[in-house]
Length: 133
Length: 128
Image 1 (cartoon, rainbow over the protein chains, first blue to last red):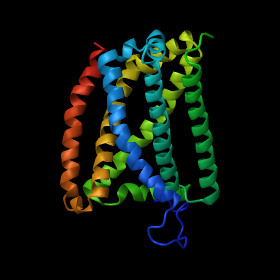
Image 2: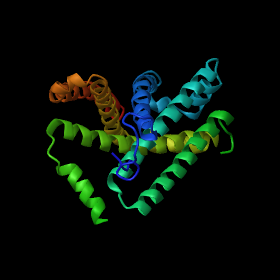
Image 3: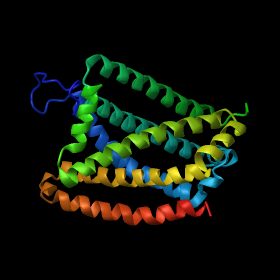
Image 4: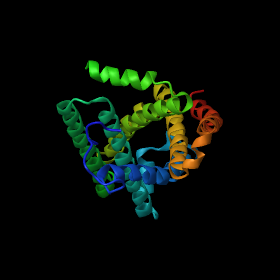
């Protein structure tokens, strides 16, 4: 995987490397999300039901007695999902875009987008529901 | 551009049977889920703006009929990606099972379809 980011660098077999941690992270985050996303989907689609996930419903959950727990759960989904998902997109870019310049340009674009989305998610979790419009 | 198309073409035409198709589906579903996750975060960000902004995205992205149909694809993608991810983890940590990997892919697909059918019915039921 990744012609560009995994060149034949002189490294001892099995020595720690970024790509090795990245491989391990995908397994661990995948395993945790298997449970967390199953709960998220069953709860939101079968208990609450998508039609009922209104603004008021979200406010109730976030500001209710278990609000902090829900926010922590949503935070873990945000971070695990974004890092797992965007690392997967990074692997795909490395698999298909072998031109050094284009590869770097696309990855920088991807990192900027990931930064914006994680910041947006953190912002709403920290500030809570708004009342501008 | 031709180099990109060639690597994609080679990725599709490599003849690896079950494992190869499992990999293609994992990549396509993964990219699809990453796209949805991005929209999902933007939609929840609108909760921070206010009820009107979120109400609009709830009506268009989550409960409109076209959204319900796309949701069925999303559900299949998530179920498949989850099941196939588990298969990858199992085979990574118990390499001896690699002998049975074709059989495991088939069993996995049966499980995914068995869970997908009721999930799709429940999702589309709200349209009628």
